[in-house]
Length: 287
Image 1: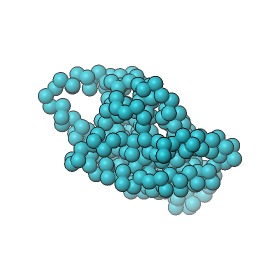
Image 2: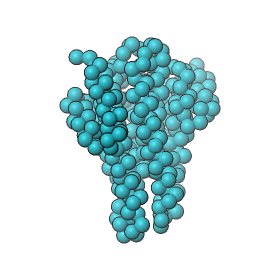
Image 3: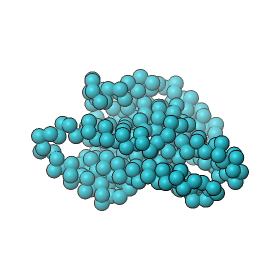
Image 4: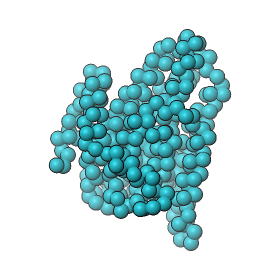
């Protein structure tokens, strides 16, 4: 699954998030399991890839040969932060609405790891010798684009709870929230989300490359998220149907494979910490 498709999913989650927040008391634990384990494995892959590139980037030939893949990793991190923030906003709003503490720790753990990965990207861009200005400028445009769209999507969720903290600029998210409230009485409001999706797709397609190093984990993350939504929150046809089909890829076997990989690749300290959280999730899951 390409990184720009995760951006589209972020918009869909924003659109359907309020219904989930106000709906059932509990969110699918199997969906949360898959989201957490896939995200943690992806974070580890990102970390190792960026670290290896930083170590060996002094060799111009090696850097040129490996740049397309590491650029794809950077694009995943920069654009994928939109989905991580939007989903964290939904999960935290749900926990607060229902006075629970089930999903918020998972959401914040994944978000913290994502913020650390983004910091590594920015550091690498500043310190990589011989990096073309054009390449850095393209990634900077993607970063700015991700910031603006994230604040808009989080702004839509502010009506379901005070989640502006998950925006890059909370004040801008609250401004978007006021705009959405003003549009609520507009007779043309039904066309807002199709237009948003079309604009979002066009914007990110221009700024992302064909390389997506972690398409398998992107798909598992998406399917884990979608498994947390009841099927009646999605259109049977139309702009939400194709992403809804991703739910078919969700399975307990996927979650177990990811958990095994996670516990096998983490450094010893991180393994101990993440293992405790992972086992806790599995211990409290429903039959």
